[in-house]
Length: 184
Image (cartoon, rainbow, N blue to C red; front, side, top):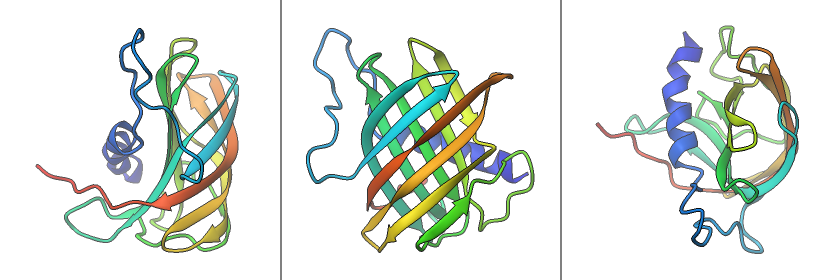
């Protein structure tokens, strides 16, 4: 199914493309966060976990057969309270940058056409434990779209580990990045 085919790609992107990482708890934070003028995002979580975070936002549109084709908006951070990574990925299989408009988040538990957007949320924190959420509803709203910049807001919700609802909302100002080639 589409859900199964996207899972390895989403995990790869969440693990590598967004940056961040735990590092040595006694040492300096390896991800000091975005500097002024860099691509950024903010997120407010409610439900199973309650927290507000900020971090780095990037997007890519890949059309090459040697990489993972599609549109990806990656929001990544090292949570300063727990020094654990939290990441959000918006993805669609269609390799076209979204234009200004509102895009509903598709439920990955059903067939997802390549034009629809899914959202995956990875929360890996000491306070709540690891939680991967495949959002079942929400909206990605694009307010500015160019080949080098994507700005907007988002809201998404889903369930983690059976019955723990996670809701997230926020905004982003993302710069484009080179795509990540997939190699054997």
